[in-house]
Image (cartoon, rainbow, N blue to C red; front, top):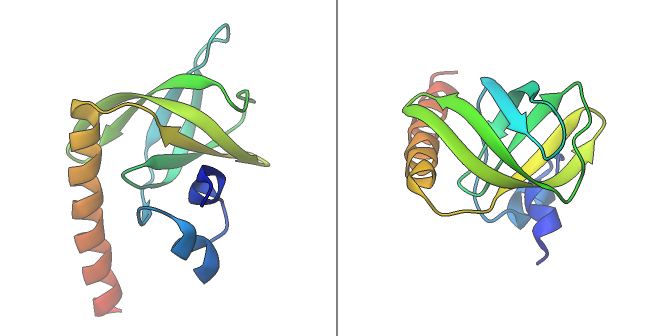
Length: 123
């Protein structure tokens, strides 16, 4: 399986099955720091342990490694990611480093899984 399928923007069953990690809805501000471009600000859509998607108004080059800064429920995170995919204003980023940020991301995903599972069971 190629990495491109892991950060696709489709939410069909087939797209979800192709992913390495499940995605969880997460809406928060994100700052992207590409090379040779001022900071790009946007809002996240969802997150997994291997990547994140965000809505951006300014173009970020595909294939570039960028620095991401965002506030997660369990703490602030700064992590490097590969700009993997773009669909209109929605971008997919694949995390490319293992660090303490990955710990916070993993804990956040586990917390979001529990919260969203409970919310779905209440509905």
